[in-house]
Length: 254
Image (cartoon, rainbow, N blue to C red; front, top):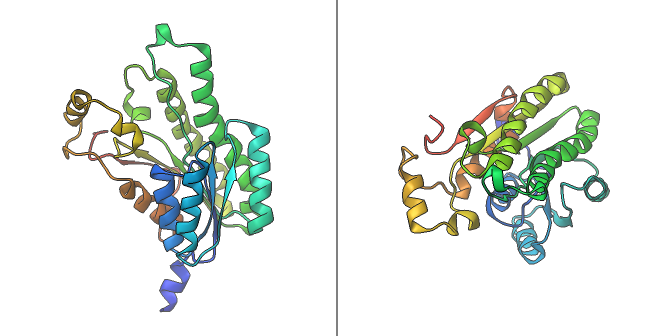
């Protein structure tokens, strides 16, 4: 391996990926592992899937473990961060992927539906970022990669709570990137479009047909499309990229 590749390598770094038992989180964790990164797998309720992801990552020759936490609960986040630091000694890369939906029209939306989505999607990003930053400040190197949504850019009927949470993450990214830029820490958000996950699989054929009219590329994305961007933003090739909201959506946000 030449010197340039050595300098670009993030092999040996330590990452925490939230909501990593399956879907985009799992794919992102595996992509980082392929780059030589040790990865902590956060899950809330999908324990068996998290265990499988850990096994897959370990088979790639890096360390991994699963840590349970509801990221919308501050005490659970603090416990998760403590566990990760005890195991890994530091956190270099944080992927804020954990997120939920609880859809309904605003007039019918229950307070609890609003609170749950904001707590997990927005507050969870805040709690995890604040806690992980302490380790990044010490090492003077860090990557915070938030997983937003195209919905946070253009809105969607029945998703005022989800849209608000994801749009707020964009603003959070802009501000935090400025706060930590001199510490060699980058902060970016990826806004996926419709990706082939369990959530999309539950849509009816009629719904899928309607969505397809919004996507210039006329197809759903794959989880690897997002994971590849996570890998790039985590790498030293993206060391001068910060405060950006990057759409990976087949042109949907145009």
